[in-house]
Image (cartoon, rainbow, N blue to C red; front, side, top):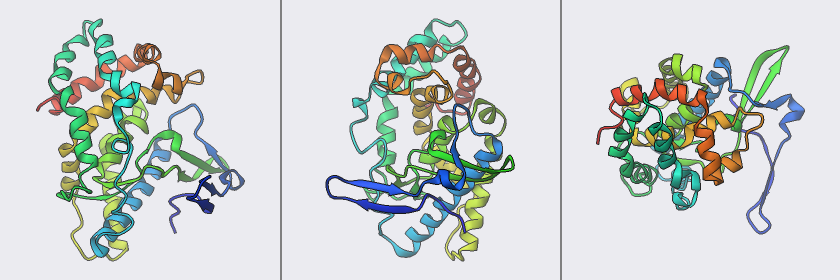
Length: 296
């Protein structure tokens, strides 16, 4: 009975192309606003993601190549990523900001050791399924799993549902695509700090339970196997962390101009100087170092 997205009313692939969905506001759904989702909202969102991943995993195993497996163009391999200023300039600007802080400049050499690999490794991951290199776990990823792509439904102040939106760049590939992205783009700093392992376990157990409930007879990936996917694709996680995490702060700034931060290097650098963002880097950069993310 899980609803993974709004009902499609009409669409056309001929010019002018369009897609029309039901109006979720009529069912009491609202946007998240200028805040991060709380723990219950994140869990409900991850529950739906786990079910999406599990059902697509089952279909790809039982039916072979199909519509799901043909979705091979996502956010990073549908166009040249370097055409986006925030990607082209992001790591350079971040290093400039880190370099003026005595306690953060020590991480610049670690970043420089691996930065030349990050985009290449990311593209390898996004092209993995279409290249025939299907070694590991493959699912249909949402592809743009951030906090602005959900709507919340409540009744009497209690959460009743979260709806996932905007499947325009869904891609068949490693679940690490969505899971690393969620860490930077869905979770709040507090959730990243205190609930990451809990939420990853929650996702994994619901992924497994969904496969069992659908009577899937094949191998069900274990906790360790799914965590191996995250380690295998750690350079994607590091790339997202270095280039995208700042948008997690722009999203909740009522005066923030996301388009300006994406397109204008000066606005991006100013955003990178946000004291709250720098404080979180003081927590996360050592963790990334200690967990081997800067090793080639």
